[in-house]
Amino acid sequence: MAKHKTTDFEGQKEKFFQAVDQLKDSLNLNDEEMQTIKDWGIALLLTGVSVFVVYRLIGTVFGYKKDVPVIAAEPSSDKKHLRESPPISRILKEQLALILVAFAKQRLVRFLESKNLLDEDQDI
Image 1 (cartoon, rainbow, N blue to C red):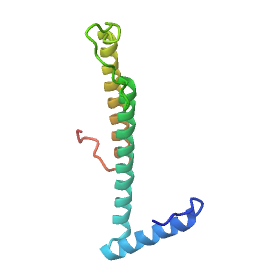
Image 2 (spheres, rainbow, N blue to C red; image 1 turned 180 degrees about the horizontal axis):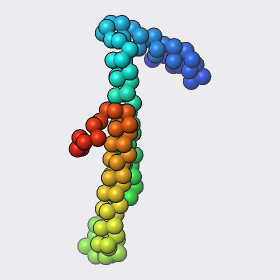
Image 3 (cartoon, helix red, strand yellow; image 1 turned 120 degrees about the vertical axis):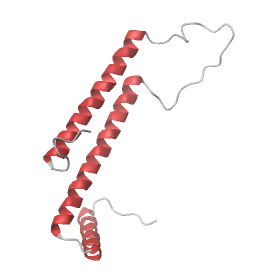
Image 4 (cartoon, one colour; image 1 turned 90 degrees about the horizontal axis):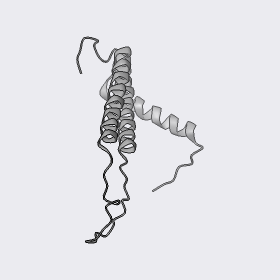
């Protein structure tokens, strides 16, 4: 696989625009259709980033980890290691996650409405 220099942004940008122009010509798209495609692309990109950020925040709030150490269970294991979090902290974490999801949804809907990609009376 060929390696590209990271400093050759102008060359990569030029190739990208050439590919977009070739695609536009091959599909016989006019400028209005291209603008609609660009708007939808931006909206989908923001949606994906928003979902990823919310996912990471929820994972951080609930303390999910990829590398969880495994403790060998012994018959006389200490109860301190097996203790769960208090119910009030679990409830607070769940509510915080719901607030974060609602906030992200509200921001996304505002953005889509501002770009006229979503009707104001449409319910999501």
